[in-house]
Amino acid sequence: MKKTGKAGYLFKNVAVFTVGSFVSKLLVFFLVPFYTTVLSEAEYGIADVMQSSLLLLVPLLSVNAGEAALRFGLENTGDRDLILSEGLKKVAFSIIPVALSSMVLSLLFPAERPYFLLFILLYTADSFYEYLLLYCQGLEEVQKMMSGSIACTALVIAANLLFLMYFRLGIYGYLFAEITAFSGAALLMFHLVDGAGRLRRAKANEALSREMTEYGSSMLLYSTASWVNNALDRYFILFLLGSAQNGLYGVAYKIPAILTTLQRIFAMAWQMSAVQEYKGDDRESFFSEMYGAYQTVLIAGCAFIILFLRVIAGLMFRKSFYEAWILVPPLLISVVFGALEGFLGSIALAFKDGKSMGKATGTGALFNIALNYILIMRFGTFGAAAATLVSYFIMFFLAFIFVRRHVRIRIKLLRDASAYVLLILESAVVIMDIDNYFPINCAIVAILLILYHREEQGIIRRITELIGERLTHKI
Image (cartoon, rainbow, N blue to C red; front, side, top):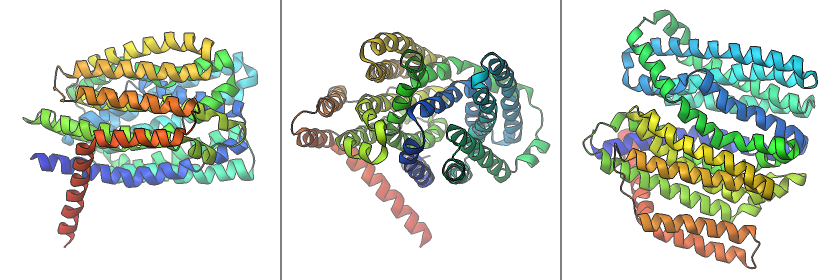
């Protein structure tokens, strides 16, 4: 595949993911003011911890069945029926320990029994939904994947209006809406990929089944450490500061979710390209170009969100939730480093090197644990956000070193380091409420755009070429 073809494959998938993800995330984005109106800080904090627990338990208990389905689905096109069967078995078996432990906890803590029982349903629905998303991606059926994502969004909106606005069920309504959305979207994707037919046609392949399990197992440290970096701060805040403060911290993540949406659109498409191209002769040039483009979008997106942070927070956060805006800047910058680490991780995983990424994320997780305790005790929830930023930087730095074993990504070290410093400076200016902070930050954003002008021109050129190709084919 020529370089232009490689970029075209990537940008074509980015375009499809953009349409589906942008619609879904935009609609969910408008739900945040609704949530912060109808739920208390404590209720939102409890829901946030339950969702954070899913980030750990789904990949851990299913032995990364979804990631294995994506990785091997792209390479083993003739065994995709078996891949579905093996993955669904792992997901189904993973429900058993969740159900048993939740039942025991419900007996030990009767006051919280409804939460534990609902968590069984939430885990079941989410685990099947997440697996089928990745399976569809492994099939390169991105339209079906996006159909599932959009259906999930539509169902969560409808169910929230029903359970929260009409029946006024509070946190229970919020959880019922999540369960309904995940279940409905999973069933839709199962139907779209002819899941029943594929299960009937699946033929045993012990060698492939074993290889998938080994691949998923090799990623356990990586996925578990990633969860520590993503979610452990919530548990520290919950136990040290209470559910109300955790609710504020959870809602603060909703603004970085804007940048996360952009990151995930590229990351989903990039995973597919990394697997397709990791054996190519010019992989170093291709990966370096894509890294530069990805970094440019992340830094520009982060800078603009920080610039308009208070306006965005005023639109999204209601009542006492507004004070959560001060936590957003370090969380935004941590998204940048986390996304770059994910980019590098996709390259390592394409080479089936999950152990190196496990070391990188594991080291970041250890720093996260230590810093969370120290900084939360000293600075409260802002300390948790700062700990997240530091741990993500460490994780990104180590991932960059480890990936050089496979591919030498070309970077401009002085420019990139200057950009990270400018993002921190922009954050400090808005947090400290310096006089005329907006013009100062406008200048910082302008400098960042100038630093990455070559990459920006390259992105515009690629998008223009892709649009031109599509128009030519239609004509």
